[in-house]
Length: 185
Image 1: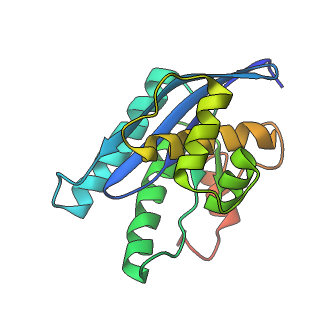
Image 2: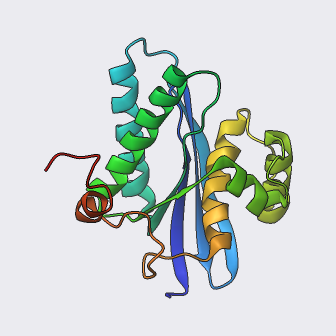
Image 3: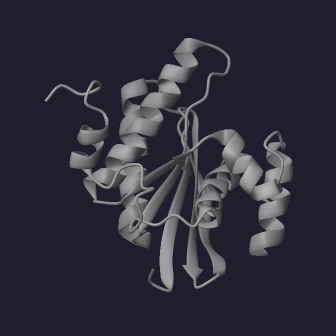
């Protein structure tokens, strides 16, 4: 593995998308940026998805990540919410695959476990641990930002790289090969 790699982490959402970018140098990691994309001002779900695609593409072009780590959708309040969340995740994945960025997917429980040691940790606990690990001054206003950052840090802790077999998808062909029943060819 190269001594430096950049990891983009995304917490997908249809009202707020959180993101964080870290750089790994050997065994050390450093925060480059974290933030949120607020989507609740857009009435159209389709427009929200376009904004997710556009912002993810901008982050990729600006920070040139080697890999994308993304939080997997989970069943929360209802099926419709999960479907919308899955679409948001899919659009962010598509933006990464469009730029040939390998994608790694982690469950919320796995992310919390890797950051705090507790898969049932609160968002506040995850944010506090990230603040300790990466030594940033203030917590962001929206914890969605630290949730996106947590996906990137979780990926760092897993030690997975695009050079191993553990990448979820390394491009459109890999996605199609691994999902033969989901996509008509």
